[in-house]
Length: 314
Image (tube, rainbow, N blue to C red; front, side, top):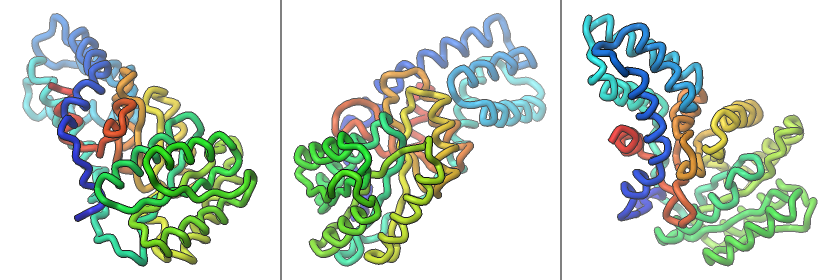
């Protein structure tokens, strides 16, 4: 069994409900964009461009989508406005497919746990995401360890410990102000010695000190490799989807200080800014792996490109 087979019988229902605000916003704007028009022309495309940008898809990704639609209109000579939803759906799905990568489904081995280094600024739901992932992995029968390597905030360590107790998984921590790399080292040593399958390492998100953050993450990676040579298997960046363009900026800044391999975009259920999923994935060329659609443990879902687009255009 692979690591990422989370089962949620209400997944599609949760997705539909979570994207409701985004869907309503986008379709209301689309309706206005084509009002009184029977064919897709320059005016409709200009209006569509505004719809996508104001839906937090982002300027560069929007221009890419508009260019693709322009090429289709030029090729087909006549495209009715009634076809626009279907075309937009196809182009967004194609765009997401370009950044989609195969999830690592390697077999779990006792001597080499799967290590996920989790990064992101304070307040995006990073620690909560770690807790939910730990719960879902445990539901899959995996043995999970958490590492509290954000040693600069007492609240971060305390919150992770609360999640550890709630989920029923061990949390490795040290005193406040300890070397984060030392915490990561201890976590992996303990996890490996006890036959853990998955290790999730929380880190500090001090973007105001980029050099310090870059050096810290580099040191954590180097130290972890002394215990598990392949570590980390994944560097997961957690972003708050409700912040729209701010999430874009955070993603760019984090990708500048460390290699990001996957994204988790949280808090999509309370916002109309779900278009940010499309733009961030496209601009970073990093796949969205998880989306947060509510407070429940099961509301953190593995991202499915087809299900996401289907739900958005339902």
